[in-house]
Structure formats: C-alpha cells, structure tokens
Image (tube, rainbow, N blue to C red; front, side, top):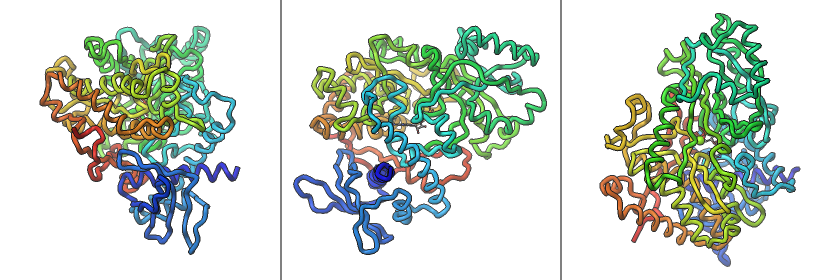
Length: 582
Ligand SMILES: Nc1ncnc2c1ncn2[C@@H]1O[C@H](COP(=O)(O)OP(=O)(O)OP(=O)(O)O)[C@@H](O)[C@H]1O
Ligand SMILES: [Mg+2]
C-alpha cells in the first residue's frame, strides 16, 4: 500500500516538474550527462532541491522518470516524495497565494485518491491492457495531459467518486424530472420528439411505468418537458436550486428510470450500456473538474441539432472528408435559463448552467462491426510495462511506424486542418474530443464530437460560411485565423502528439525528427494544391515558431473563487516548431 501511495505521488511530481518547466514556471538545470542519461536538478528558492533523470522531447520539454526523483532538504538527499509538499516547496516560483495553494492541495488529494484506483487496476492484471472497447479504454486514461490536477472533482467525496467517477467504472440509472415548457427550451432535429427522448433511455415496459407515474401526477407533454438529470445533480444541487419552481408546480421529480449508463472520461457525458446503440447524454454537473465547472451553458443549446447537421452536410459534400470523417451528431438538446441568476450578467457562470441535456450519437451506433474506436488520448496514455497503445497498434498492424503515422496524419490531422482552412471551422482537437477509428489496428476514420463551445468559426466572412444560418453564426465564437489554428496546434500537436512521439521513440526507436517530418510532408502536400494560399499563410502549420499556451499558471493565479466566465489560457515564450524549417 505504502509503495503504491509513493508511486502516485512520484508520478504526479514527475508530471508537475515536466509541465511546469514547459510552462516556464520552473527551471531545471542539466547535471552531468552520463552514458546518455539526461539528469537534472531543480533548485527552489525555498532551499529545497529535486534531482531526477529525464528524457528530452522535441517540443522544448522533458519527461521526468518518477522512480529517479529525490528531494534535498535539511542538508540531506532523500527518496521521500510527497506531491502536496512539492507544491509547498515551489510556492514562490508558482506565484500562488496561500489561499489558492491550500485549495490546490485539497484538490490534489482527490486526484491522488483516483490515481490510486487507476494504479491498483493497472497492477491487478488479468485485464487486457490493450482492449480497444471505446468506453473501457477511455476510462483507463490518465486525465488531462497538461493540467496537473486532472482528476480533482471538487464537490465530490469518495462515496461520490466510487458511484460516478469514470475510473471506478460505475453504472447508474438517470433521475427524471418534468419541467414546465415555460422554463425549459428544447430543440430537436426533425426525426426526434419527446417520445424518442424517453424511448432512447428506457425499454417499452419501463416507458409504460414512466407514463403511469406521469399520469398519476397529471403531467402531460403539452405542458411539460420530461428529461433526465444526473442522479448526483438531483440529489445535491437541483432539489434546492429549483425549490421555487418545485413549490410552484412547474418542476416535478419523477424518480429513477430506465437503462444503465456509464460515465465517459469527461464525467458529464454518459453512455447507455444497456443498449449501446442509443445516444450518449451530456448532462450538467456542478462540480469543478480540471479547470472549470461542468454545466450546460444555455447559449449553445438552441443551435445544437442544426449545427451538427450542418457539419455533417459539410463532410458529406467534401471529397476529402467524405468517408474519412463522421460527426457524432447531436439530434436533441434542452436548456434551462435560470430566471434569477440570468438577470445578473456578472453572476457566477456555475449557477447559470445547472440544468440541461444534449443527446449525441453513440460511437457504437456509428462504427461498423469490423471497426474499433478509441480516443486519440489513449494512444499514449494506455501502456503496459513495455509499451504504449500507439506502439502496440503499430507493431500489430503489419505497417512500419512511418506508414502507420502517415496514415494517422492523413486520417486525423488533415481533415481537421482542411476544415479550418477550407471552411473556417476549428474544433478543439484535444485527445478527448478526437476519436480514431481503427480497422485491423490501422488508422481508418475520424469521429468528431463536442460541438458546444468546442467548435469555433473563423472571424473573417468567407463564402463557405454563407450557408450557415444567422442563429448559428451569431452563437458560435469567432476567432482570427491565427487563433483558430491553435485548436489543432495546441489541442492536438502539443496535447497529444507531443507525448506520443516521445513514447514511440522510447518504445520502438522511432525518431521524433522523422515523426514530424512525415507530418510536415503530409501538410506540405496538402497546401501545395490549395486554392486559398492567403488563408494558408494565416493558418500556417509550418511556420518556424508557434505560441506556447499555458494552463497551470492561469489556474495558480485564478484559484478557486467563482468566475463570471470560464478561464482562458495565457501565453509564454514561443516554441520552435518541429514541423518548421526547410
Ligand atoms: N487526455 C485528455 N485530454 C483532454 N481532456 C481530458 C483528457 N482526459 C480526460 N479529460 C477530461 O475530459 C474533459 C474534456 O473537456 P471537454 O470540455 O472537451 O469535454 P466535455 O465537454 O466535458 O465532454 P464531451 O467531450 O463528452 O462533450 C475534461 O473533463 C477533462 O478533464
Ligand atoms: Mg470534450
């Protein structure tokens, strides 16, 4: 037990040193380079030092070997490593106040609790590490790759974690409520209806029980919309937050009904495991997970079905995207505009997003029998003692690493880039939003999801956006092209490929220079024939320098108080682009 706790602490401190040096918050000095060993020391102004072995990656960062970490204090080097103590040691460098640091440490402990569960599962063996089941594989990944406390669900206690957190692999039924149409807005694509909302979450017999309960309370769909809520949200938030309308007869609790659901790694999106072909449901959860509260912002809901339908029509009409990309469409959505909090423009966003749902095509309903689908984050996050999933797939695909990666770039990176430069559409392409479909362990297709807030348009008026309705245009965030491109550079290159390329080097000796040369070739071939050279110039993936985006530094500064809006990242010094040059 003691050993496991030591290990999760070491892993967290190793990640913290690597990412905080990448964010230029800390500076670790190289020590002697013995027999190819990259060893460094971190000297902190508190007088405490850390020394460790590391491996240099191509993106001006290094990965720390957890087992090698030692701490110097009171005149002695020791092997005791404690994550909370580490942040106290480097408080000054992190420029974090006592109040923020104490909250940070409290969140960190929640993180360690879940890390231990993941570690124990990893060690228990018996399971196939490289099982490609979409849900099982994502629930074994190690959280956000850049944010240091990436499994701290503030608001949840251990009992909640074991009932609802993805690493505990729980399953649960949803709680249903009836809300007066005066309070809730629902939006459906033409083939959806209130009946479909119900039948997609429960079988015929259960639906009859559901309707019986509604009849007993004399609730009809003419007056009320029936929707599921996360059981934790009902129990801990909505019973009190909706108290006015419960007592006025505009909101009725109906009870627990229907199929079993399991959380995806994003926590608030749950998948139907009784009938996997039924849609996933994204629900509001008033807990702080990684950087923000995970509610459902009403402003995107009005456009959900239309936006995903439009994106699918773009894909269907484009020869580069057709057959290579599919959108996990969002055929229905509903939102609640809080009559009181919404009147306070500068009020806490957390309180405005407590209720709402998005129904989204499930992966199981989108892939064929001979296909498998994994989050791209799984490629480097999932590993056994010898190698990561990416290396395993390459070895078992019958392709060389170069052939496999070229295919990956053509299947994943090119469509995302094409959407940006040809249609002005940016999707935050981090490893949890991009789903790689494999056939015979080779990259085959890309699935896109998470369009509410994570899809943005180019700021310029371009003809490709003419067909988009006024409502969509006025709702979706517009960004200058130089910013839009970061959905790919920061979202995918730095958050997914940065780690994968170093893993492939370590596991199977595939040089990082070669990895990025292939990517640059794929991009170069694409831009050579492009009809909008001026757009390419402003969305240039091959430029020598790119911006370094910082997330932890922002969190140290903003802390844990309520905010009016979700936090936005800051910038550090530019990075040398491994795709640049030539
Ligand atoms: N490797 C990863 N990269 C990014 N996010 C991750 C990763 N692993 C876990 N996560 C978690 O997934 C969520 C990503 O946030 P994002 O806003 O894209 O998703 P979401 O809107 O909550 O859910 P969904 O993608 O299901 O619509 C966060 O809760 C984050 O902590
Ligand atoms: Mg997401």
